[in-house]
Length: 220
Image (cartoon, rainbow, N blue to C red; front, side, top):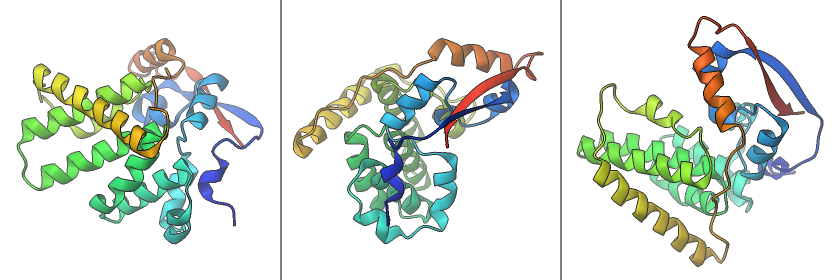
């Protein structure tokens, strides 16, 4: 049986649909492509489709665990997070992130933030660590990683810029070290297309023109 992750770079017909800007503004933008070039970038970096994420509650975890490709490793880690097994998920997500799966890095950061917050670790520290990991994801190329801050941080939280910079430097160093240990090239930077377009769409989605239709691309 073919691994679910093996389809990451599979060929297929590219379709486009139109959705309201308001819908995009309210959804997770990391999984959405506003052009064929952005879709190719998502596939290159093993971003899951929503259908793949929805299937994780039904898929055989042993099959994912056996698969060596980065996308399967990422999906395996996310599946473990959903089952409350965050520490067990981290090696798989770190492995995938080191091989260029930026979404794996982002989800590991969010899961670690939730876990450390639940354990009662100093709030400022864990918030700045999350900010730093989002900054790393943006340096790698994903300008939509900022979504994680709005999804996870409490309203009104304020960064300690010096701490965020220090953590960012350390987390980049760790990524480079992991790549050396795995014998692979360090991931990124590889800028995601459409940074300006996304900025315009986000503003549009929160304006009086929120019903304006935007083209979204996917592979069938």
